[in-house]
Image (cartoon, rainbow, N blue to C red; front, side, top):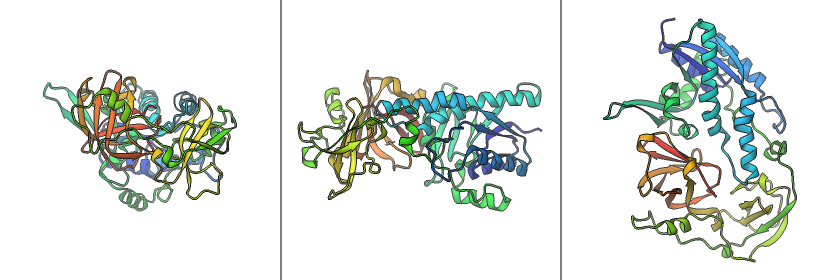
Length: 410
């Protein structure tokens, strides 16, 4: 065992399996580790794979690749750090992204600590090591003019599979011990490699749903902690919506904070314009832009959620994809919710910069101007954005480098 040690998170999927193979081919001393993070089947859709099957396939892959294999149970911490956070956010009327939290809190934190323990017991002494996953992203190491080592988080080369968005909360320390061997390859190439090697995961479909939980019926899943509570569904006509003033294109340097607040304001409508059209079982079970689950018919156009008012348990909806209540020009992130993957490039109050931003995975990058103020960051887009959702992550890039991220505010 002469190569640098790396512990690969084998999930039972094809991506992590091929990641382990590629690292072994590159001369690394590879160990596979499976994380058991969720046991409860409440809300899981029928036919969804359970962790037992995942573990079996991960173990079979390790045997096929002739690498050591271990299983760790992180379910207690996963519930505290990820699932309880989900419940808390939905209870506030926000829509969290558990995959981003799972990466920051579990895969690149607890996983690293557990890997260190296992290697120490396995080898007999503490050793330096990397951790690796099957994410389609890249890390580039560089040195600043002052001699400080900087780790750049870059988009994966496969434009259809780039997963840098999900890594947007990682720190320089976490990146320094991480490897992403799939960042230079495409998904079709990964499938071909797995088929050529006859890996047990070669034909397995990609996982869907909540990280380590699976595909769930969200209301049923959330009702483990959030109670159903009947409330009114209120329709807001298109002509009753009063959008704030939107400047064309990107704003200039002379824009003030009051104007920024106005531009980035979300749902606004003319008082008394709404009409009660039905009932719901809890505003906290819905998210902005949602169409399914309303169970209200007889409308000329499809109904979409415009705003779940959790405080008053009211659900505001509107007809049509083009409803103005679904579109916003900007968003706000409180200062304590801003995270810089590149802390050396962190903006200071009074600064503004133009970057490319996305507010959800796979969304094409959007031109925007970032304004840093004492209270936080305002992001104003060149074009109106559909479905800006509190609780989700806005992520900004300079070219293919991810610089930072933040949780979208109200």
